Length: 261
Image (cartoon, rainbow, N blue to C red; front, side, top):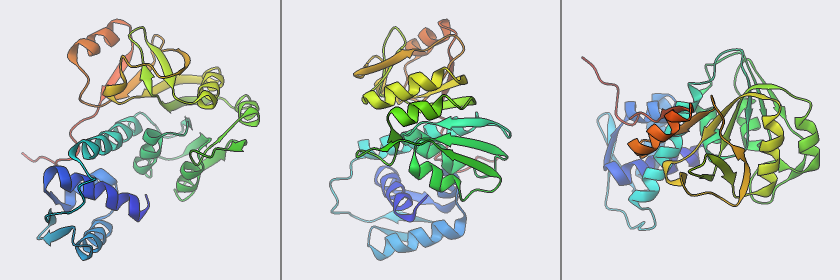
């Protein structure tokens, strides 16, 4: 994870919680205490926080554009990514379709090896390339103007050549009838093609996207598919998913330091 991305997440966390300890941030960001202390030092130079023994507290900030809602959404994103990463096992062949949750996953798989990672996301490929004992395969295609990813006819043709154990995909909509959808036609086409060559589908979805279908559908969730979402999902929806034999994982409270005793 780049320093600017860590700084953004630390800012968002402090805007919600007002204080944080180093241990919590090392757990959340999966980096060393040395790196976190360096990040806190930089943010203190920016007069965003004041370092304390073992952590930091926020100072009055003029940056009103940061809101508690944005902080919560950012933390949910990383929580979904961390929870999803626990479904990856050594020896897996994994497809990560470009998306915010898949980019969060790679922050938590450094120690899982060996792995083969197939992706259409350039930033994921570049990050995983720095990991030990992992093979990275980047699909070919046309570079998107909206995100660091490739799509198009060449990408679809490339996808036909590969078979993976697990595909992780961020979705933008999940209807009450289990229809899955995204906001991009090119992404929907890629996911639809990839499902033909995938053993297990893992659907990554913020709770707010349930019962709110997006524009482009790529099929329905099937018996045995896995869903990873955040803690805001309702109990009634959980039961609805369980009755359809869908596996469901929700984020745990990973933002508080380890509990002892």
